[in-house]
Image (cartoon, rainbow, N blue to C red; front, side, top):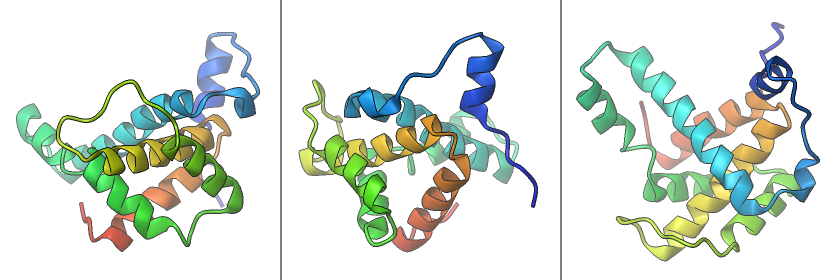
Amino acid sequence: MEESIKMNAAILSAFDKKGKDIRTYSPLTLAYIGDAVYDLVIRSLVVAGANRPANDLHRITVKYVNAGAQAKMVEALMGELTEEEEAVYRRGRNSKPHTTAKNATVEDYLKATGFEAVIGYLYLKDEEDRVFTLVKKGMELAGLSL
């Protein structure tokens, strides 16, 4: 089996940075990086689908990168998460964000924050394969196809 590239480790190495103990990160910090990682995964899939004008790419992307879609995905994934991932999800969902999404309920926003925290946690652990598995399975279970 081909070894996957560990992006976080490669970035830290390229810039001579040391990683921190991610267990000390706040759930909102995990969600912050998780949001970017999830966005990159979805954008990569959208771009792979077709070479289109940027406005079209954006319109497709926002169908998947929003609190409602992420809440559906994490609800569908609840039986698939490990105990450790569930604990990170609960920390993210129960966090007290300083903002809320414009077009989402508070409940969906908090679920999405929990989902993003899980994605961020896995990314910082260099477990990109697990990120891809969860996103793919979450999309399938939630009926979101790209």
